[in-house]
Length: 590
Image (cartoon, rainbow, N blue to C red):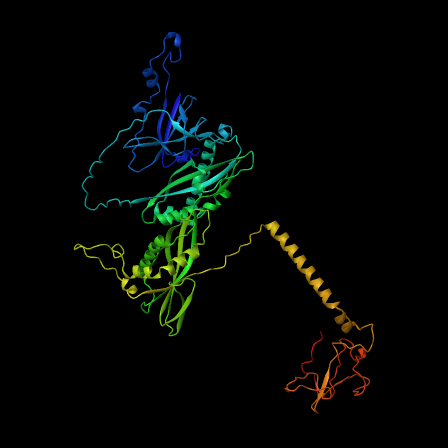
């Protein structure tokens, strides 16, 4: 049978059908079974002879060098379905190891030749892979305990740059998976680990700005994605499926490595910030997934300091303040009903210096919680920070209130930590064992932490509509607005008083109309269309006379006030105001 062996640096996951992803071809040979291998009539062959026939000779191998800390994938392919493997428990789990090497569980391929899944030359059939599977065989290798010393450098030559130290970050995604009874736990673990890994690789490949940035500038790589069935007690509540469905709790444990130029806390945040949306992103048919694991929280807060110099903090002082605040919150930010909260980072977003003489600020009285007292400050600095953390529900937490209350409750402790930096914050010790000075820490020598306050910003609302649905919705909205305007206009014009005023009433001609202009004559003063009552004693009926004016009859002192529709062809108002000139501020109709 034909035997091909390929290798690649890194995981095999999602590369099993990509020939370009396997640049190292280690073996290309043919193995033959000895005569009488299966003929029991002639006497069975010794086990050693059978095993020897399946051994790939050393001469058929091209050498492959592996360095400490590297992970390699080996793809062994045979033209005959006579390759042996057994069922595993989780992709990437170590099933054999010693002090020099670890061999992890992988997958089994069911088709030949390799890398032909979906290819027209192989009939366009998608290749099948079964996982997790355990390799049954022996791996022979040579181990070099110490690398040979480097040759002395030649003048003019430049040495290769030294690789930066690596850090490892681990997170877990936990789900309740509702599924039919005929789906086994092994299949669920494979599908979920496959789906999570695919999403993470897309994030690292460019779909997530943080993870792709860490991959580009901090050499972030996905080392392993392992699935395990966990207990409901580890989640905190039971899943009640719809019969006859079953519910399986699954944890996906992810390990990534990166240079230590980025912190483990920042990488943790970037891996978890999309966790609650994973059920919508993973493409796995036949499952209903609910995310029940760790998720990120963040809040913006403003801390007000007094007793600081008349300037804003410099870069080193901002870094020091953020470090002290993060350490303080990690020790003091707690929720009484959920102890899973972890503070990941604190960053300074903005700062504002205030030097007004009568600056006034509210301060929480620690002696009596809930009471507010006021004091006047001549100088103060507002520092806006962003705090990021992670937690596992239930229950949910009010992260902004937790941060605010923890600082206000122990403000003296925070200011003492700012005044007395630790040895690590001062930069370690010098050759004499004395603390090395850090420039700018004198900024906090007289600091007083006045108050912390959560900055609550309204959430941004984004409306996304497709081309067809959006235009139809806008058309319906326009039609609705048009109909509403027409209904309001009809109601306005058809009100009884408005209708009679504009089109003439059909009732008694002597009926008083509110749109009738009134002329007031008071104490011999001038006559006009508007007036103002300003005397404190008011006006009697004898002091005010309401007179009717019409185009025919002029003024009449004896006749009662009547409205003559012939006085105006439009609104019923007179076109003149006697001899007093133009109307000034005629009161509009009701």
